[in-house]
Image (tube, rainbow, N blue to C red):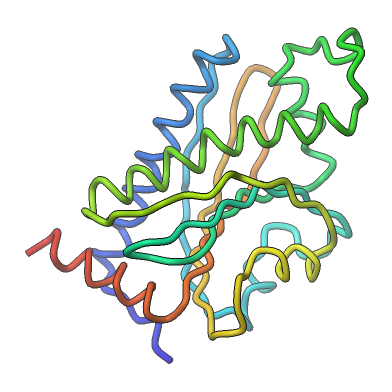
Length: 204
């Protein structure tokens, strides 16, 4: 199995993901009435057995994620993963700090806030890749995941085939907020190859 990719194509992937998270940030600014900056300083492509070496916080016992499956020209999942403790910061961002007065239990608030933010970011990225690379994709409804690393990985992947991971470090900045998450694509070998081929078609 080969995950080789030209440097110019890796840079194109990083640029497209940055465009996507930028679009997501613009939508979040309007939704939440707060100036939010998102950027992706680094993108890494690894085989699944090396995933934990690149995971943002491999020693944290509990992670929280938004997971979305997609089918079509590519098949796989895309996931926005945070340390579970950082989700509380996103709750404050999503509610303007008023979560104590909502009457909603904290667990529901955490789940709803992460789903709302994750859905916007993921759709911005997947939509950009689909449009710019001319890949027709159908998306599922995003789901909230929580658990340790093994539990999260088992829920992210959809089959037992060899899997390639694209890991994009994603930084969220807002007033009094600066945290990182991992935007992670799980792709089978054939889907990964189609993605690489689409870079070649675009740059011809």
